[in-house]
Every structure is written in structure tokens, then in C-alpha cells.
Amino acid sequence: MVRQGHAVLALDLDPQAGNLTAVLHQRGYRGHTLLSVLLGEATLEEIIVETKQDGLDLLPASIQLLSQESRLQRIPGYHGLLRRLLPQLSGYAYVVIDCPPSLGDLTSLALTAADVYAIPCQAEQLAFDGLHDMVRAAGVVRDNLNERLALAGIFFTAYHPNQRGTLNHGTVEATRRIYGDEALLPHIRKDMAVPMSQAMQQSVCTYEPGSRAAQDYESLTHAILKAL
Image (cartoon, rainbow, N blue to C red; front, side):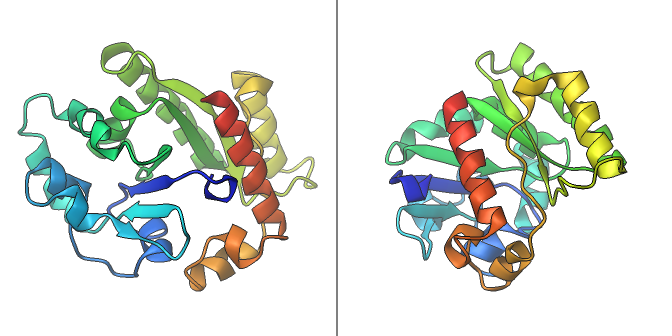
């Protein structure tokens, strides 16, 4: 999105801060988070940071999210707090929220604020089982909290497209049968450029723009933007 000239805010809601905050900001971040703002402990201006990439800002995550989540639950109507905060982020063309790999209040908070959601999934049985849970949970949010929420699609990461007849390929085909071709977004092929770019704290599109993964993420971005 940034490479297309859009101003983007990456909002990290993963308490482990294992990828997004570590790559775009710093490893082992322990500072304020989105919930610090929702709980009145900080302002957006205090915690949004610029990244090395022009046009891309980050609202970081930290382990504090785990303790803050239980406090957030005491606020009436807390599921809608992020949605009500979004008008204060009007300087961005897009806000992209990275959710934790679990179904809980942080994910619900994000889905209640979102227009569309995309589900990354590994082509493995356990991840495939979790995919069904995610779609069902999003349906509950859509029916009760956010009627405009729509599925942009599902995409597989670290995918081996040539491994036909394997569990990897069978999982993708099962997803196609259940959700339809229209629900499948471009996949991200397995590529060593991804972990290498993370080690250098860069996006793969910046670190190695000619790599398979960078090309795949470009295709994925175009597909998601079409869904908006």
C-alpha cells in the first residue's frame, strides 16, 4: 500500500509483538500500546512512531496488552472503543491491524472496527481447523457488533504450490471447496527472503523487492484493495 503512495498506519494488537513491532520498530518493546490509549493512559501522539519506510507509521504492541486486556473488559461497550477512535486517525488512507493468532477480546476489538478482514493461514491441518473458528467468530461479530464487516479472503503463507498430492496442497484445495474460489486471495510462497528481511528489520518488499515473496505480497495487496 505504501509503495502505491498511500499513507498507512500499521496497528499491532499481538501481545507477543513477535513480528510487526519487532520488524518495524524494535525488538523487545515494552512501552505503551493501543489499549494504553483506550484506557486513558496515553495519547495517540505519544505512541504512534514513524518507521524507516516513508508513509508507514506504527502503533506498536507489547506484552502489556495481556494485562491491559482484562482491565479493558470492565469498560461497558469496550468492543466499540477502537471503532470510535478511528476518526482520530484520519491522516491515513488505510489502517492495517495485525491481530493475535487467537480468538479473544483483542481480535474482537479489531473486527468490530474493521471494514474487511483477511485471514492468513498455514497449509497445515491445525491451522486449517483454526480457520473455521476464525470465520465463525467473525460472523458473530458481524451479526452483533459490526454489520459492515466483510471477508476480503483467505491466503496461505509459506506455501509450496508445486507440492501437489501433499497435505500442503490438499489443505488449499479443501479451503477452495468449502469457501469457494472467490474467497482465496493470492498465496505467499515459501521464500527465505522473508525471515532474512525480518532479521534486518525490513519488509520483504524493501529488503528484496524482486523476491517471490515480495511479488506475492504485491499481488495480495492489490487483491485486498479491490475488496475494499
